[in-house]
Image 1 (tube, helix red, strand yellow):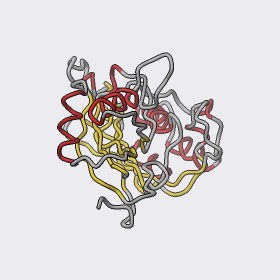
Image 2 (cartoon, one colour; image 1 turned 135 degrees about the vertical axis):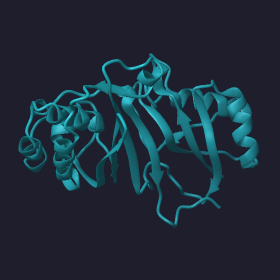
Image 3 (cartoon, one colour; image 1 turned 180 degrees about the horizontal axis):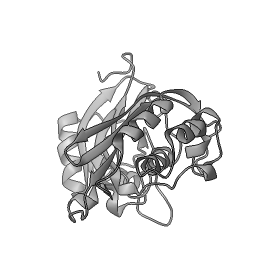
Image 4 (tube, one colour; image 1 turned 120 degrees about the horizontal axis):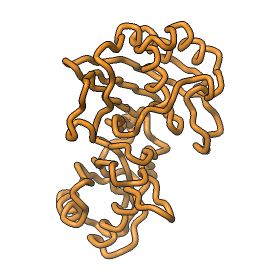
Length: 251
């Protein structure tokens, strides 16, 4: 039997999603909790590999188990074992053959900036401070270049294990709510560090240190990573949602 999970976690204390030999990762903690609940070893496969310090509101994952366990009971039993900064938000039985990563149709990431002189300790857990004079209109113009299928070498960190840097972004937009400015990116896949590299470079545009046209050339000409801006800090980033095609829905 294949079980589907929607997971939310605060990534502050973890070395990312993927299990590691020298640090605690979200995958390891979830697997250990499920193994305790189900009384057998469990391997959990996530839809995306969030980096150290990155959060998730809607990480998707699956695992296989030969035990029939009520999904509602699975949610509550697992959450009783998990630490407070990781939660199973939903669970369901999936058709045989379902794979959380391979069958994902799109992923949505959001990055949160706050225009302020001083960022409160509570906000600082989930956002990055920028100056009040940030030119969001210029950032919006630059962001238009991201939509479509492109070779995103300018925003790919080394060590991602990707064979190709080609990705398709279906939506790229800035949303303003008062002093909070959030970037929403929806695409068929993302390279290691891609969203944070895009944000770091767009902040340069908003601060007047890079032109809208120069940003567009990074995308259109598949420029190398060292020509783009810095990688933005992890705490502003959230894996918001993962979408699957209609033929892969919970039973």
